[in-house]
Amino acid sequence: MKWVTREKPKIDRIACPWLIKRFVDSDAEFFYVPYDKVLQTAEEEAAIPFDFPAVEYTHYADRCTFDFIIEKHKLTDAALLTMALIVRGADTDHHELAEQTAGLWAISAGLAYNYKSDLVLLEYGMIMYDALYSWAKYLQKERHTQQPFENLLLGVFNKFIKKEKGAKKKVPVWAEEMKNIIQDQIDTNLSLSLRDISRGLDVNPSYLSREFSKYFDNLSFGEYIRKQRIEKAIQYIQTTNYSLTEIAYLTGFSDQSHFTRIFKNHTGKNPSAFKKSLQKK
Image (cartoon, rainbow, N blue to C red; front, side, top):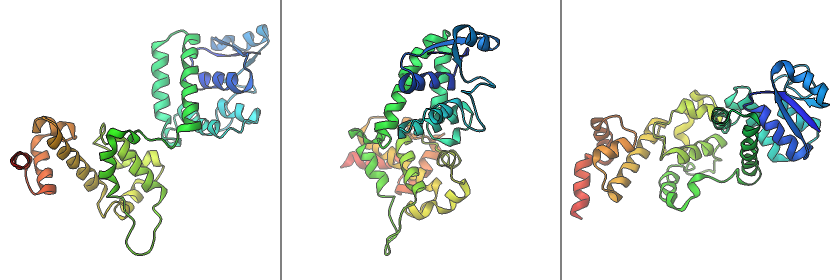
């Protein structure tokens, strides 16, 4: 079958051809044309118009065309349902729907900027959505921190996630997921914001702030993050030749005096004294 939609695609008009080609019509041929030529081309080419107003294959309420294709063709693959939420969030600017949504938008926008030919863009988009499908199908439980060189970080974090003594208490899903977010980002984003994380978890930031210490060794969110930054600084001091100024920068401190003050609060020594004590051993 032939399919036609508007030119200059970003999300839905790349995701839908991938879905159609992989699960509906393996011989599908796609046309990208100007807005005012979609229905004319559909008639001339006997093509099915999609992601276009007032046609069957389009948006309905808060659902995008990708959702409609899944429902229309009774696709039940759980990985596709996971992808549908991500695609919908990226296509409708509701990035709170799934934590992968903002990433899909960023990559899609970048591809569209780099490749001006819609068909070339579709070619690369097929590869991108094949990868997203593989993640949704086989790799959702995988974490970047499962790499061997990050095992030390896991040890640092895990000791702060403890259940209360006495009666067994189930750690809520948001606390486990927050632990994973911090584990994933501690090397590259030491200025993590509770508000940013709350959006990704879809949990009210006031609730997170109030409940956080119950599951993170009686530390507030800010105290916990500062402790991780100091632990990272200690690791750098022990294992690298970086200067203290470089270590302050690498662990997210805006200036040396702030780094020194926080370091001393946590270790009882300023960074230079701590470093000298290691050299004497």
